[in-house]
Image (spheres, rainbow, N blue to C red):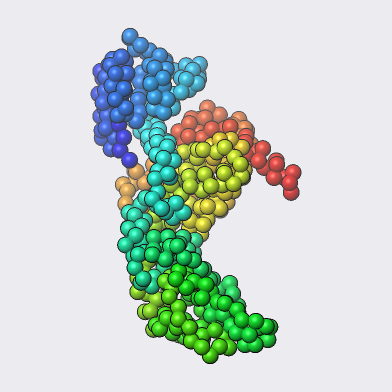
Length: 476
């Protein structure tokens, strides 16, 4: 994501150097000024994402400028740089809200890593705020969220198809929200004031399913001591949702075909044909054309069901919806569990964005629910999610998208991922103790601190995690 950077330094040569580095090696827009007071006036426009400021300047030093910027906009990221670097100065700058502290002269790679980390953090933080506002603006699809093009197209088609009487077949992997899509179709249909009946074709035994669907008359079989209405009759005037239709037995496929073709059915053991005025929606995670080729599904039933098809994408295909969905589930489970959790920290959100989600939206929901249960603060953090170790290791595997980058960019990206995941595991194993972690890794403590800063890792998170683990051990 392109951003805007303002550089403030009383040395013109330094401004030219930083402008050249940012322009040549990033896509961010950069402006420069030698005057801190002018910088504050520019920042009032709200058009900047990041400020890089020198520490020693006339009129106003970097610390005072930092304080003024934070008073103007507490969310704006500021990086302070100086040729007079001391630990005390760095601590003061960090305490007053600086995102990082760079000592001159600096390596080109150092400033570029800092810019990338800060801008990424800014992007996620601001997006999080926008997402919370967006949750209240979902028109009628509160349980079927999405802002990506593929989901907007599905919402548009649902509104177009819902008022008709056409039969709909919803396909897609497990956990993608097929039943939610079916409910949305019903909610926007002319049948919305009548019942929405769901029957799971897998959960009910075959010898019971026919009776559940069509009902039975008294004496039809052992135990049929009175007439019973079926779900088809219950759904009259409304919508019947046949979930996992691909698992329906051949015999029931034949009887369902007649219902779909003629709108007629007979209760089990009955002689009287009944009429049904129903909107049919079916769903399956199976590829029905393959099932037809294997002789497991009737071709004529498939074409009767597949009048209108909705193919729901996996979560990996709509990765841009992960933040919106995450905040939806956060709000849901914070309310259920009586917790005041309003934020997902940027590092946790970045981690959620990297997962594969074989279980799709349902898996993301489970992760957020678990995070809410373990969270002790008002912000959901990475350690609250308790993600599996094998997932962390899988995330380091070479993603195919890297082959589209230059060698240098791909190398830098993988090094950044390695640093973040190695340090994460190192600190977990040492309960957040930086000195012990550095000794175990065979590196200087100061160097580990620098790597942590570049990766956006703070030790407090791992001390909280240690508390979580102790609680879990006590429960076990």
